[in-house]
Image 1 (cartoon, rainbow, N blue to C red):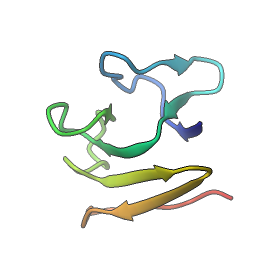
Image 2 (cartoon, rainbow, N blue to C red; image 1 turned 90 degrees about the vertical axis):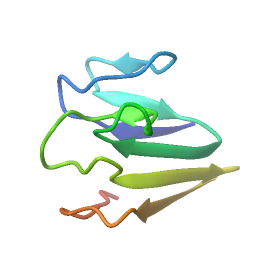
Image 3 (tube, rainbow, N blue to C red; image 1 turned 30 degrees about the vertical axis):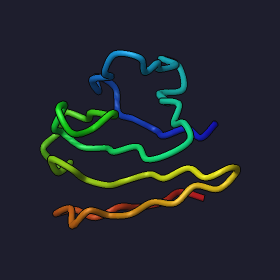
Amino acid sequence: VFYVMLAKGSHLPHGMTTDEEKETVSIFEGENFIGRNSKECNVVVRHLSVSQRHCKLTVKGKKGYITDLNSKNGVFLHQ
C-alpha cells in the first residue's frame, strides 16, 4: 500500500480513508487519479493550486509511478 500526503480539509470520496494525524490517503493497485474534479479523480483535493486532473499514480506490485497530467503547478516528490 502506498500513501499520499494531503493538506487538511481535502475531500475524500467514498471508500477512501484518511489518518487525521498523518494526513495520508491509501493508494491501491492500479491507476489512481488526483485532482479537483470529483467525477474523474478518486483522490480529490479542493485547492486552487491543484488542477482538475492533476496527476496519475499507478501502483504495480511494490512500485509506484507518478505522471503529471499537464497540471499548471507540476508535481513534486519528497523522498
